[in-house]
Image (cartoon, rainbow, N blue to C red):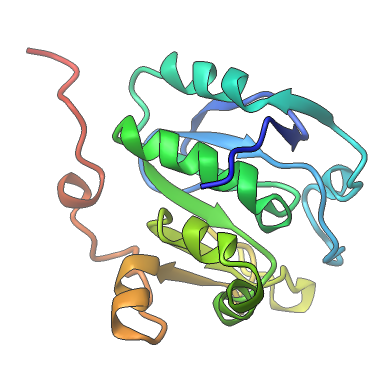
Length: 188
């Protein structure tokens, strides 16, 4: 795996989120997005020169300081514009027992096409548990959806999809949290 030295972030690692995937999660807000979705909640993350360059080692140190989080969510911006750095961080987070969710404006199928030319996209996907894919579409906005903003976006079970060779949706209403997001108990 090619190692990156820096990642461009819009903000520091957010340590306590309950809206960017199930459980208590940390969120990495990547900087840079070419989708420019109308109604985007984070347009300040579009500029590829915005935010700041952060050493990947500093992100790993921040992950080491997490205490009760069950997962790490990559959002932005769009993490798929920085696949090398995100892949390295995802691998590290998984080694610490965190599950990985990624929000991207690309569809799952588009990411697989990118992987045909640049294998790093597949390497990154191999570390992802759930991919929330597709551009935000303001006309399809639905505040009743869990973990996504518009009805065209999908929650994709990446390991099952890669194994089956077709999209397998993550059933957010029927998952077993202990199975998917197992962590050491807080109290003995």
